[in-house]
Image (tube, rainbow, N blue to C red; front, side, top):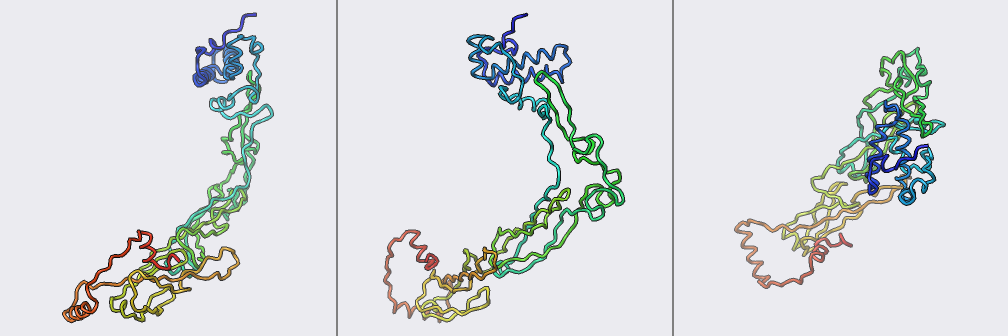
Length: 386
């Protein structure tokens, strides 16, 4: 019996070769000598020899024993012959070269049966008032639906799909291969039926065998009070149709709230900037303030400064009821930020009046303590921070 060849010589690498160099060389030789792809008469023996060498040298412990004791250090270099024991990544390499293989008892079956339909998204822009008080909107969108002519069979009424004779209805084609590594089953989708397991001799005239049709539908969307931009409303079962009897997906309506001319939102509160003149600020006044509920009166006390905030309770945004029981959970407030307007131009009469006022007020200026930016913001926004 001839002496066994050196494993490094078989693979054509040096004893200092790295694991990456070893793997790269093995891939090249395996692609060249695999019995299923090579036409060379000794391909089977060469491939067995290459695989045995790689099994030993790809294992750090076996390689160390081989480097020290030669073939005797690895029990004669016997080849274990299996993907699950001692192969160190052979399965990944074989799948990359030759497709997906199963074991001797059969490959992994493709998943078939009813499948849920796709979820859909609809972007809806609503007004500021709709976001506050809620409402209803009709939306129109396209979705896939089960064909009502063939009831989702894909076959012309009066006819039926038949079992694919190529795969016998499994949707898979298996090819058994024998090699020195054992028996492998290469599983691929049936090309005759495209993996469905059935053939449709007479296609439905409505869906052309697709089993589904695209239709434009109109749905009513109920908008809860208190929503905001990016709020999602789920319409269960209003998405794309399921496949092979599976349930339909959902429709997600994503809201975008259009900006308002006057109001801004801060959580559940509504913020309004209100401009008054110096006389109203100094003497006080009863002013009319717009709110989402309509105009409302506000008392501005004498000596009101720019930046003062008045809280109009209960005139903000309704708080979303996340319990699902439809309970009234209250509303936020409207925050009115006062801005005292200084006139840029004055009439002669107004100039005289301001001069008289100036003589009574004097010309003393009072430096203010440096409160820092945070302190200034707290003073300006008042009970917004309360």
